[in-house]
Image (tube, rainbow, N blue to C red; front, side):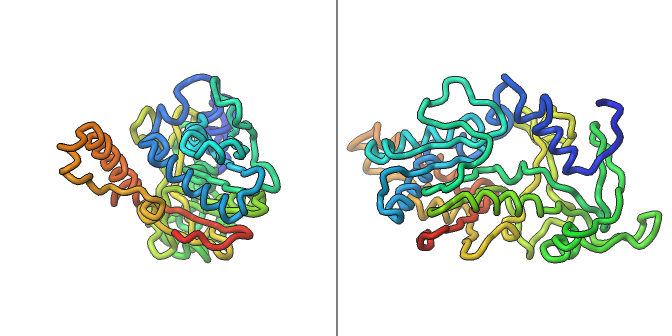
Amino acid sequence: MEHEGPVRWRTAMERALYGPDGFYVRPGGPGPAGHFRTSVHASPLYARAVARLLLWVDGELGRQEELDLVDVGAGRGELLAGVLAALPPETAARVRPYGVERAGRPAGLDGRIRWVSEPPRGIRGLLFANEWLDNVPLDLAEDGRYVEVARDGTERPGGPVDGPDRDWLERWWPEAGAESGGESGEESGGGRAEIGRPRDEAWAAAVATVERGLAVAVDYAHTREARPPFGTLTGFRAGRETAPVPDGSCDVTAHVALDACAGPGAVLLTQRDALTALGVSGARPPLALASTDPAAYVRALSGAGEAAELTARGGLGDFGWLVQPVGVGPWPG
């Protein structure tokens, strides 16, 4: 394995994240929460907001006998557990929760949660994917050529980008789509880009499992008008950003072109706007509460701090939410 030559980044990511002893499927260890902080881990307010979104979907579906909740890229099931705890008991009793992961079922997981490797078909409810698409493997292009990488992270130019990948770049990241003009590669064709076509396809396949309801993807994101000129590929290990070395020792991730993923009727908004619409507010509680109910004031102050982190500009609040209705009206958020 150590002597394998360089391969394209999509193959390297697949092996590093999901291959034998890959970062996300390796037994034991702390799981994703031990390496990076997501909105799910930042505050229970996030799960409560998703619970309120599920209640909206439930109303749109007429409060049917069974209500599906599907968490794609479920990690250790933290979001599902939080949503179930936040729901009214009558609603929670009707929910069919699914955790979709390529790793095995975590120990001690709530027995109500079905643990599966792909979303079930015919979902009637809410499919939610928090920081899943950024870990869908993809190829990189630089100056119109694929980038190849060895297990130690060393890169070299590959062949010209062609076919559907070139078409994707021309439509969604056009400044990176031109081929280098000379054999030496000295003539730049427009910089470096992540070819997001596999994320588009993965999201379309996930949405296709929803019969009626809402599909939501939340992730680091950028849009066509503001693509980063040098790409976003990076790694995370033990809570710190690190070089994206595809040897299975760290997470390897890249921001998502969510606008390219969006289907008909989809809405793209910031996490700040989405969570505000779902009742998450960083406003400080009135000071008068400190004298009438000090304990409640402290709790409210703590909640305001957590809400501020979830909605912060330059941080989690800038994440993108791609909201795709399927057979229901548009979400009013």
